[in-house]
Length: 568
Image (tube, rainbow, N blue to C red; front, side):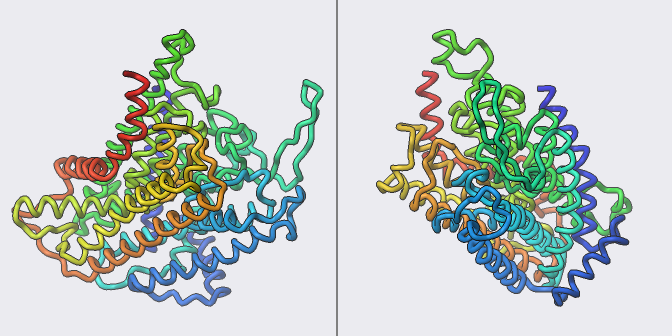
């Protein structure tokens, strides 16, 4: 427990200044890096001949989609023909077509679902020009959309900012500097950073073993900071070459949490009352505090359930004297233990990163239900900005439901919530469960889907639900018992990742554009306050009730039924 508390305390100490710094970047205010990076940014603007004029939501969304589409096309061809290109000292061949489709969609949507092992499936060119490059650009794309969304909720008019300017500023002023610091920490702990070919060594048993190397630290740093999650190696952050020590483990956990939490602080700062005397000193406004606390409550509940479920272990093993009061250590690294494994598991699926330092397929039923549920919710901080935007959808839904109960037109952040906004909110909230449950039903109803399930009974269904929940939530982790590198699983998860990312973002930008164009209404004594403890509790309950109504039947047939079978 001390390890968990210490890690979270370090996170809180770091997330506040980072959130305030990101607020200055988002609102184009002065920062301490301006003397250097203004020159860098202006050089990029001039080389690319960028038009930096503001965009409405339609133009912003169009440029976001178009830019991502071009990068998908280029990356796909690099993966297909990597065997004939440079930086391939291990002579790895081109990637199969459906796997290339799945991989490129996965990394451009910030999902990083991997149906391959990086050390044997990708050349160094693919690792650098596709994987690492898209870890930066997909993270920058998501954060840029968050910036536009926040401007829409906090401002007036129709200018959500310029997508390309946002992309460049996020990359040069946030992602690259912080990723460099994280990479230095990882290298100091023993994570490799080299372009040398794999090396063959003689073990103490006198046998030969190939040791995979590569630019691991560079990938690992942006993988965690950008909430990407894809590992250089198939075993991801469970392997010592990606995550060798407890210090590196804590650094990776904090890196995963940093930007999603900072986004909430950035948004809160943008909404601080302009008339407030202490605006510059405010950490984040009351509106931001409500969102942050609501997310934290759901996160802490999940962490407690996961930790104690893993600590309780398997009762069947206990009956035959094999548990020995150490809990469930199957699939976990001894150097991390249950505490750091449970924390990493809860963080990576709450902040939709997808990196793993233990095998989620080996979690206890309730321990495995926590990451599954948090991906189904997709609003417990989530990826940089995207999880926050999803939580705002729940906040608008909560305002609408409360408005129905008190007989008033719902208002949020001083703007009336009308039919147009509610239709878009419902669309965003329905897309996610529709993709998860619809494709899960397809998988268990077709021979091609059933062939990938390696566990019978309840756990087999959990594998399927987890795969599509991870894909729809842009998470990327998996119940790794699933045989997923097939045409069926590559195509279906690729479609889920694509629609789960882009349909929701387009609708959310439309909501931001609509609210930005509305005239602010005055608060009255009858207005529902959305900046107090009462609304925080309402918001948490709305999230859980929505999850129960949509996902409880599926969870009952998966992890809950498996838990009851083990314990009763």
